[in-house]
Image (cartoon, rainbow, N blue to C red):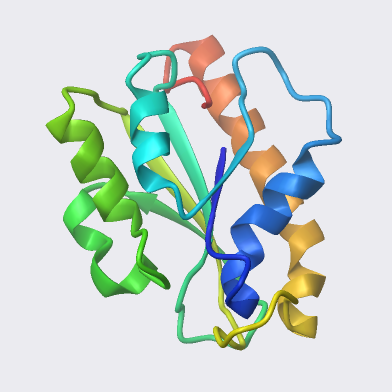
Length: 160
């Protein structure tokens, strides 16, 4: 799981906040949680190891819903990222394009997105987005369990 976003721009720090909360949670073997912030190239390089078939990105995402709304988005094609998922300069599409250019692949990409309230300068999440962090942690854990269960039955990938 990769928390992405810029902690200096309000709700764009949602992904890092979720990664920070997950740092204290015991996770199954093969599951990594990292706060990548705005370091998309580092994420692309880390995925080159070939150990992760599934990538879960956690990010502030303009969903068109009320601030704090959460959604799990399965990405079938990196072209679908476009402006929908790019709430800052380090877009998931850029990360996946860099990974592909470097010769790497990931089989499955899921985005756990949260509708931001504000993306202005400041290091605090807005109240509705801060309140959504625990829900996002639960979604991440649900996704991990679903991916691991599917890998055990041979119907999916393992989590990364």
